[in-house]
Image (cartoon, rainbow, N blue to C red):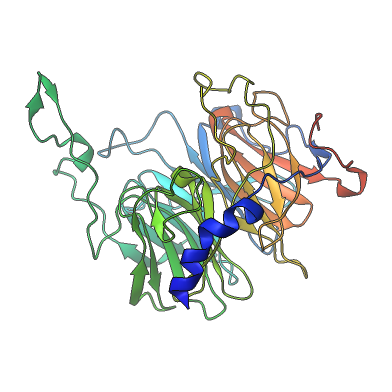
Length: 377
């Protein structure tokens, strides 16, 4: 039966993955929502999470006062704000597993989980701020990271090896999610290219996936990943993985059986100059999903985003795009690589606007949206 479903994928591609038109959702970005000292200027903000009290935690990468060794200096702060945006405290200062944190999530018990790409760890902080569980192991300080290891010279240029999977360890993990039984799912990540599953006690259960291509149209080779960048689980215990480099979201059951692809294939201006770099001379129809956030509303929705054209997408769980908002840029309400999304309600979003060095709080107004794919917010 599984073999039949895979064989049918090319036949279904024309209809299931045709470009989707979707309305623009009007929204407001609240200016100066977060209150903190000018001595605390933000750097790259890679993730944002909201707990049951409405407190917001952001992963900030500051520019000074940090130590190494990783690829360069270690650079991570976990900053907590109250429900009004007022700064409360820094969590985990000096914790061994914090080096270059990548993902932040609160579980249903208000424990804060941090997945650190630089130290290959996933940590659980209780509400008081103490580490109560660590999964993974930080590379030893005297060792050179794999990034710096070459495999000789070719024409006078050092050739670096391709990243290698290492079983039993995280290799640049990215994010975390849980099912209804508190099993833990880690997207692992830039190097291992898999999903790792643990039980609620942190005991290893299994993994699935390997490094590979999504094919020319992003609807081939299920269970192969090219940077599984974010992960989420819905109330039916389906696991959603933002397979960024393959330009798709993959959906699995909690045993790792492939269910379906979701593509970000709404039309966009392919000639528009991106916020960073040069235009792609052959831009694909499908853009890269970087983020996953599934609402806890009676009807669950999936929010995700791409780097270009820099939009946030609202989807049903079966993959239909029901609305979208924003574009890349530097102004308020524009985005420069959204690296994380928190969705405490259907119409309130917090976005980690990475290269604009900020978190934006967005209030959506779907009641005012018009049936069009163009226009501004």
